[in-house]
Amino acid sequence: MKNLAKLLWEALPRYPGQAVSRNNIKFQHKSPSMTFQVRHQSAVAGRRIIITGGLGQIGQRLAAHLRAKYGQENVLLTDVKKPTKEVLKDGPYKYADILDYNQLKRLVVNHGADWLIHFSALLSAVGEQNVPLAVKVNINGLHNILNIANDFGLRLFVPSTIGAFGVDSPKNPTPDFCIQRPKTIYGVAKVHAELMGEYYKERFGLDFRSLRYPGIISADLQLGGGTTDYAVMMFYHALTSGHFTCGLRPDTRMPMMHIDDCITSTLKFMETPEEKLKQRVYNISAMSFTPQEISDEIKKYIPEFQVTYKGNPLLQGIADSWPDVFEDVNARRDWGHYHHYDITRLAEFMMDNFKQQLDLDSSHQRVLS
Image 1 (cartoon, rainbow, N blue to C red):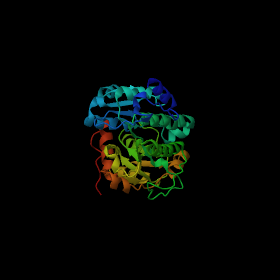
Image 2: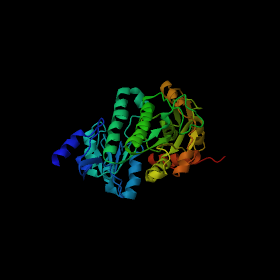
Image 3: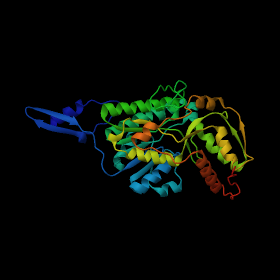
Image 4: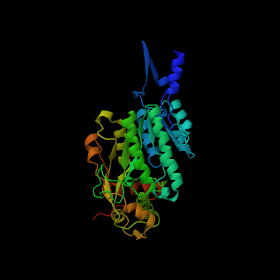
């Protein structure tokens, strides 16, 4: 029996990067022959969660919500950057390089993870400045994540983006299913992630999930180099210098969402029973606006605020290839996506939060029309 087990182990098919555990092989004696099968680990009731790229715009906020619900020690935040003292106080943190397959596997085993949330990525503008690095992080790193999630039967979330669409896609509205063909390495990698995740679901039964995020807006100044970052910086400069130079045309429309709505929908999506999902990748959105429109909202608080539009060819080219308006009817129907913030509430939130961060008084109140 032992020799046969060894022979069957050595004969197991493997795909690149796959690590099959002997513990996941079930032998059944059926005279006169023997059969075996590789078992896929089932999800457990408890939640042990790992977040990669956790020090970015969304990771820390999502970790806080998950820890409040599932317990501080059950949510492991990881990244390749040095965390602040505040991050270390909030809960467990580990260094994790997504290009190091064995290190990732040790983290999953040692933490006893059953959810893996993968935020590690180079964003649109940064990725165009270093394409080889973007390929390594956004594509090769994803392959490691997919294989580890599949090996250990994890529920895997990989966010996608408005950048997964291109100039040939319908722009207003952009549905879940249409031609994509993005023109940036960031977008190409995200389409690759969507298709690979769907393939792993069909081929191996991986519980893969993805949301196409619009531009995510928060009062966090540690931005990742995305094309929609201008909206955050416009509020900051309105309160500090009274002037902002925008790298996009004033009529450049893109889908946007407040970070709280993003977190709420991500949690709701991850907690939705698998049988309720009619697809693996969904658009989500809340609003769409242009630089001119968000500037007009700011001027309701600071009438003297001035914006100079000085087109950045790289940023403008990226923005022009993206959707104007996201259609998210499927997400709202299948698992209850909703949003709270519109452009008016967003402006109020951003003004209040930046004033607190900058220790400003309440002199910039909304001027009612």
